[in-house]
Length: 305
Ligand code: PSU
Ligand code: MN
Image (tube, rainbow, N blue to C red; front, top):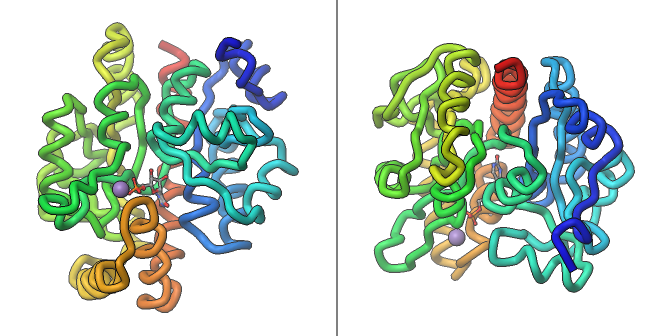
């Protein structure tokens, strides 16, 4: 068996890659574990359309029918969004999903692996995983950070999810050698909020500037990933002062109920939806779409270089 026995490209993605056209990878955990049905599938379709409108081809990634799918056909996307018992697939889970045939939604880490295997250098998501609050006792650090340290893919996000310990997350990104670029900002964005109060290590102001940077990075395949942090559009943001109380409540409830491991992030996102009366979801949708548009523009610029 070789890797090729497990890879299936959608028709659209296959022809784009063959023709050297710009492609943007998308994860699927946000669809199955990050948003409720039917908003999840509506958003996934809008995000794909945003990428096409900006000149690139979307490749949503998931594990279905013992295959690592690079690009989902519309019917497959519908199926995944409604499926029960979908595995949350990170680096450690990819083999089990492929071996058993269980449907699997890929996290940032697993989507980076898949994008790299497929030859897609740019990927858009909502917010990456990172160092959880209390990690000094729980050791709960997302595999996303490890992956960013090793896999040469540029991840466009709205920062790390604000339920995390953001100072520790930035420290670990530096340790793992990941360049973190604030897009049009001097601050590291905080997912639902534009500002975290923490400095972004670098600042860049155009897709061309980022593509130039990625071109240089791409000459060294063992230098690992790059993080592009794009603040949520102003009209959709929930300022830190408004959201911090809700985050504290949601994180405390997770702890009180003994929620741990892979379930923490989905649980807290669900609680945030309730606590903000649905507003956190609208913000999440706006930021993913904004990241998809930026990722497409970066991919278009990179394809010209
Ligand atoms: N961005 C969102 N919603 C999400 C995620 C990202 O807007 O649900 C997912 C990503 O797949 C990310 C995962 O990799 O949350 C992080 O999970 P954990 O903290 O368990 O590593
Ligand atoms: Mn974790």
